[in-house]
Image: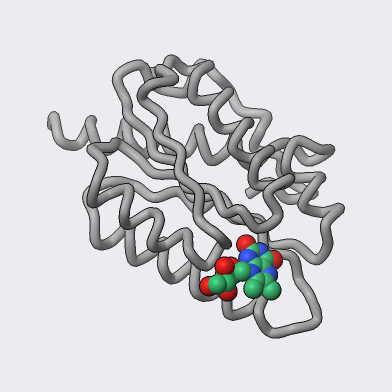
Length: 165
Ligand code: DLZ
């Protein structure tokens, strides 16, 4: 994760498999869209940098982070994909919504990983304030969108590798 101690946007591109023949789904929460949009842009740039074709990247929007689970499920049900990335941003407020949404989406995405044969990548920022989110969406701690894209490529490649063994 892109924390203040570790910035996974600084990865070794030589160690990333080619994404040339891969198909990706990206589900984006509209809540805090200035952040989730920046994560999306980072991911698309990184997928394309590693060979993914624009027409092989399907982007769909859901209202909030809580809906990422259902959006991810629709991706798996209706599209033939190698990996799905889910982007959301939940900022700690004074209500307990933060805990419910974070638990809901982390459990939901875990369930999707267990239920379907493709990887679902957890691209959700859970921060104390907006500045921490900005710092991780193209700011001083890198872009978690890049990291999610690299994770998607690596997990899709792992599955293909194991299928062929
Ligand atoms: C309701 C809500 C709140 C309070 N905060 C956020 C947030 O910080 N980030 C986010 O993505 N979504 C938030 N939501 C909306 C929920 O994710 C969800 O869309 C609604 O509860 C409807 O199910």
